Figure 1 (cartoon, rainbow, N blue to C red):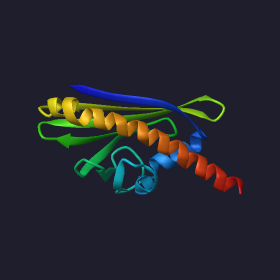
Figure 2: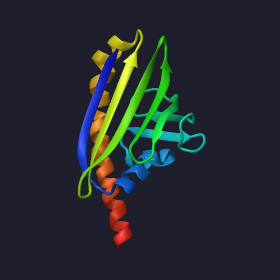
Figure 3: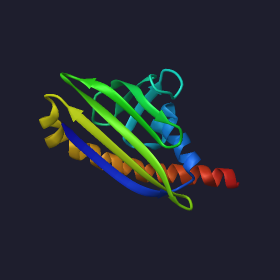
Figure 4: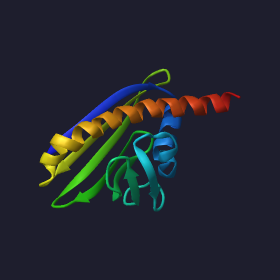
Length: 145
């Protein structure tokens, strides 16, 4: 198994951060990692989705866990293995949210992820957190107007 993880504390309202992160269709409008995405039903355990990340293949995935405003996880198949991700959001102060994303890869593609995809995925995770804060700030400014 191979694990990739990144975290950041961003400024934003937890409800807004959760809304942004669970609006799968909207990911490509703010997340530089996502070219396109969709969810084939409600944001609940068992629902399938599809996404096309920048620099990677399009894939179908399934939500494996959803804890409202706290955590969500997904999994997709790889040849002979799986890629699973866990996203957590914790309020750590006034308008401060700790965001953690962890990806686990199993199977024969682990060496490829370790050498090639892993460093790129981790860099993209950090870019996503930066973009998430910018989107949360933009939405807060829209509400304030």
